[in-house]
Length: 118
Length: 166
Image 1 (cartoon, chains in turn yellow, blue):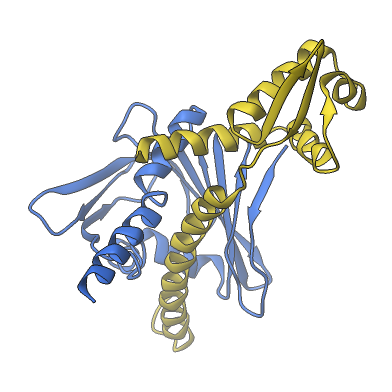
Image 2 (spheres, rainbow over the protein chains, first blue to last red):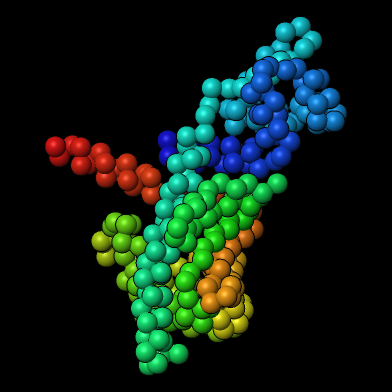
């Protein structure tokens, strides 16, 4: 379960690390689109676009459906709550760590100010 | 390509975190003291051990800390989790330029990060950047899983425990 959650974070961060894929999510936010439309929009080949869509689909951001010969893409149900929590936990660790460092630096600065340390 | 994921502005010097690409993590913060002082707090073991593991991280404490901060020197940190066993983190300093930068390896595993900390003078203040570069995307994910990413889980467990005590 835990490993599954981490694997899922890997997938989603990796999916979002690419500007084109973030652009696809933005575009799909305005409404569904076919692979062909997306490929035109981003100036890519169909094969290239299919690969990007596949990555987004695996991460759960996009759902595709094939009707006849057209594959339509729309946004999936998956939000970014887990990613936000991950980031927040990491930020909190460094924030707390650096707050503690800040205190020690203040002490050192004071000592230096009194001419006893350097 | 870079993915800014979190930052906080305010009257104080807040911490910002960026996940750069798939393999790198960048944390920055400004401190109100010259680089010589920030470097000192980072490079002297008795000072370093007072801040590296924040009090907010419950259940984990830094039980020993040996730093030999010079090019070619080594470090070793041991964390206790309450039981007899400790977790060790160790490696060596690839480059140390006093008051400017420290670069070290993380040698606990095959795919440890190279960490670079720089101290940049900004008119009496210090812009500190903490940069970790992992050899692979997977290595970053695993390392984070072992540190901060474990936190929400620990907090959830604590939460559960507390609510069961009500």
